[in-house]
Length: 398
Image (cartoon, rainbow, N blue to C red; front, top):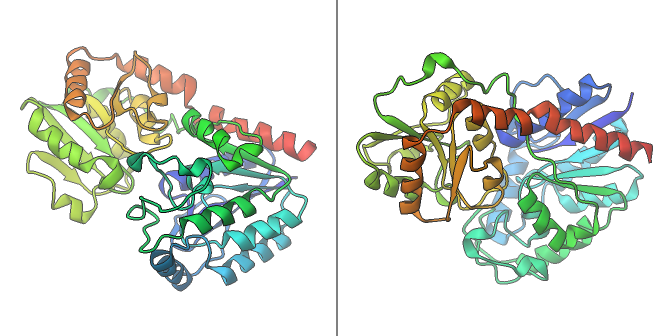
């Protein structure tokens, strides 16, 4: 039985944690022995075997030094040595990296070890952090320095927030470490990120785009929730707040433009964001109740995603699976979820165009079954994540 080790800060928590869980369960059902190595902070009950190697105090120190000195991924040395020992003890046949930022791994310690062993490594890219000197996304500052050499970063205020600029050195260190492996395969989760990766220093490696998938048995059409609301619900959902890149200000502006027949509902607001939204927006915090979320997707007349930086948001897929059309900004890989029969893509930052698209799509509703059909054909988790299993089998048989 081949052994698979998955590494990610979150275990069955948040978008990447759930993706790791689904990949691991599918691999397990296909004859792999699976373990997840994760940080101590973001862990929920999982059906997979797992091992935590970080510490809360270590992650706090890592986050502090990253803030002060722009050193994300350069602390947690003891914790990462613990991870290396876990890998030695487990002896996996394949290692699958997901996010290695998040204040829990020292990437130099990890990659020096990975370069010393003859084990294939797969790296799923959920953002752009691997090939920049600082950013996870750079759309909002319209920067292309990552193509050659990062310096004088204009994006220090965004995650991973830093008070000093170390982007030149970070870029050089990442390039040296991340390109040191002999057997590495990169997996961007959108065509958009795939093109960026090919233009970066990671373009030397094989690159295969595998879109994220969702559980279509969970996200589904509930016929008893059709046409229950007196107003047309315009729904926004985020797993980690709406400030900055997720378009909080645009939701507020939109609430001033849309006619009274519409009701904006935002799920996933942080406490400070709840205090900022006007009274004509219904806002709530993050819900751990998936069935409640499914109900909101079903009740919505349209799902909107006015994101300014994104890779391939699963919220778009969840809405489609529940039969709800999507209006999104032309940002990153977000438009890849829809076509002309299931949604509308508008220019980033054009709130008037966003409002027009909402009114157009709700006055001429997209059939729920058409939205559902697109999700079933393209974004079923088993079909999407089976591509990983095929890749695993190929890599360990080489």
